[in-house]
Image (cartoon, rainbow, N blue to C red; front, side, top):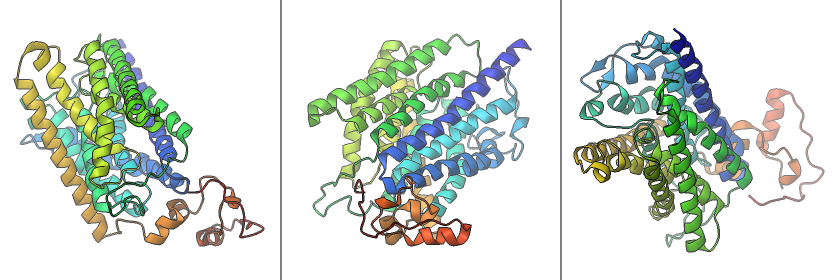
Length: 438
């Protein structure tokens, strides 16, 4: 009984930290996008925590953890996830809450990749579909004890494949279908850099994500007495630090400057990559995994640009490519079955199969969502909405409420007055200082 109480406190606290990571996603994305779209990315995170969380609680959890059918899908617990019977000393509702944090995290990965040009209504539809079927179905294959990949011996302790690769490759498909932001690519294939609006804000988001990652990984034990807790925590720290250091040094050598956005994404890529094996690899293996992923994220970002996929925050490179590498790294460095640690081949083959399956499912799921949105609510923002900025177009308020920053008072601001009754005083002149250009 005492162990049940302790585990409940531990898992609920871990779940709260994982859900707090949504604040990290919000700040990270707001700092990486242009000022005129900062409110929009924040509102999408609220969609994750509302629509996404409710959809997962009502349907997605059952698809993922319900009674198995053919190793493919859950068939019970719809609307009553608390009825799940666990094999550990933990109330099922605590497990539901923890898994809810994972579900909305997979959705938030997509948010950044489609930033600055996606119809807001389409994102609401995306949240529902991701958390009802796309994430839970592949999650069932991996984490349901009767899932077909689980039965093959696939290892993914905290979700490099189940969460990150799935979210990253869903994001890749949707960003490709959506098309780039206006002016992002030139006809000759060269890339125009859209500078992040606020690197300190993005850094704060990364720090919050890094903090939450300790619960993301260690919380997956579901057991406060598990002796692997400290190992998981130190491996998480080492991989994040190694990923950031590798990206920092490579940008200094390759570009001549210590690039902050690449360093941030190097840290995140290291965290993503170690997530699958954090409980089963050594500390030195965690350093190697983090280092490789920190280098990989830079070249993956260049590849995404080469493919003319516009990803404002680097989500595909961090989560998609980092998640796949982390999944394979388990097959290389696992202390009991890794190819490089024991010479065993079977695990790396299973990990390769699982990685390919999750990549394909993510691409298929993202393409399906894009088509559904295009046929219903519309997928992409209009040219006028994109030019004005999605903050004013969809939410009626700028991120920084300083009207002198605008050369013209947007029409939507007058609509805001009409619908709310709140009067917004216009600037004294339409020809005013604009501040930082965006």
